[in-house]
Image 1 (cartoon, rainbow, N blue to C red):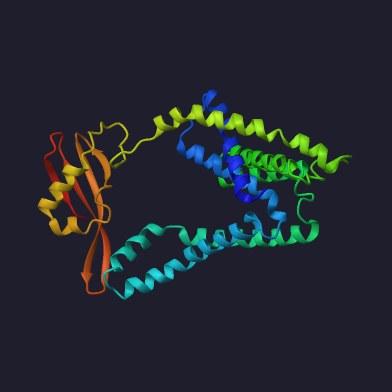
Image 2 (image 1 turned 90 degrees about the vertical axis):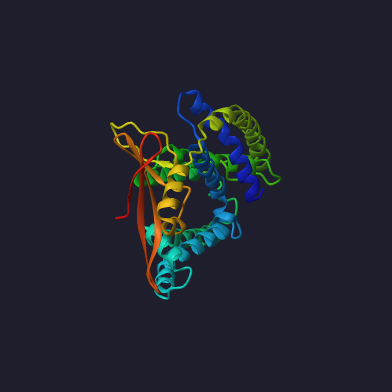
Length: 315
């Protein structure tokens, strides 16, 4: 089986785990579901790190390396572009202000890509495809490592377990192929490596069917958890937040300070906060202080409970 097929099998079977969690009372939203699918998908690809052209050991590290290098060198590009001015200078400055830890993540991604390349080359050269890496024993060790990594990074450990679940689904699916998995139960000896493991591997089929059923029953829960608010709401503890009306606040801003309104970075997404009985709407905007100098500033429109503008603040 190839990488996309393993991902599809893993994603389908993830529904079984998520439905079980939902039935146990755990809140399941789209973020949790997508993160779970990603964890299982990664685990579904991982055993093929012993193949020189597999996604996990060749194409995925290449993509990660490209993204990492972009994040590393983006600050240099932004600095050069901002200093030269031009119509895109404000955009570059805004992105630069939002970057935060992007360069650090770039370095991490580059390191991950290099490690994957080296591990794949080492495992492929030492064991070959469908060797010890395609075993429950190595899968168990990889799962323990994944759980530890999740704990170190502050991620819920059960995502590491889902990685292990994806690994198992990969092995079961591979066991049903013509060659089977001779080393599936390594270090134990399996007398009929192809036929025996093939029969065992067909367990993945009911797991996929149960998973698809789980996704079917989860559809309503996931749909109910989907929200599309018009604004990002930041409520102050202990204060009553009025109904956000960013459209009305934006109209007041356009009437009072049209030049500022035209320079808003994201007009439809102000930060909304309660100020007593009033509601404040804050945007970022680009201010050009010279031919080649731009800065990012904020503007706040405060409305009362009737939608009338109380104040316009430009720190």
